[in-house]
Image 1 (cartoon, rainbow, N blue to C red):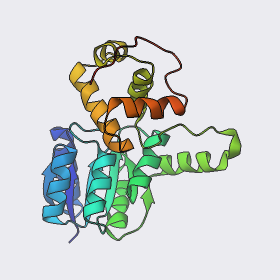
Image 2: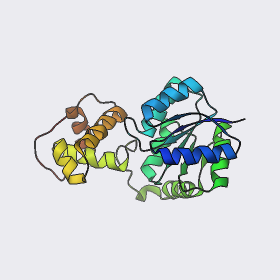
Image 3: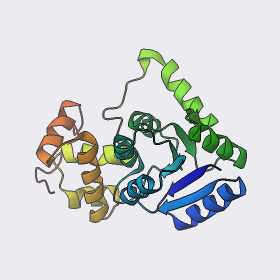
Image 4: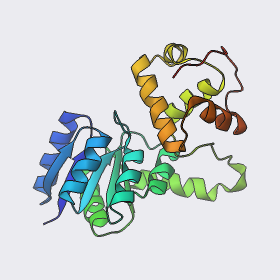
Length: 220
């Protein structure tokens, strides 16, 4: 029997997915509500497949996947998300995920993805595959976004940081809580491998971000 660990911060979604997987003959051997707990649970249970949400508190799914595979190279990860954002797809692939599936996928599609990733095959849903084909066949006319490992929201935060805005101002600009902004900043640091705000701002400005300018005050 195929075994799985579910990593998603929405308990209702996890419960529904667990029920669906059990109906498909997949044994769910562990669950986690954030990326940090997800890595720990996957390392403890060593399932055939880890179903990992992309956007989560504490540690996002892409970073969690990278950490998991660094410690357990044989891990088979299937990313789950509500959005088929191109940058998230490529960041997940770069992190080592074998599959990427939209949460609105049908039962048969989920079944194929889980069994395929558990067997070590790269599996992507039809919509994600279409986006990938469009990206790779677009040619040089498509300008690559800087820092593809970041989510769209993280890139927005980084852009405002590069413009010199402090966290409270970024929070108001993006209609987020200050805690959420701090979490996004921490995630950006981890993904880009930087130690402080000054270093990441230099990187962002060199990549062309922060052109809009802003207050010179910065916060941690």
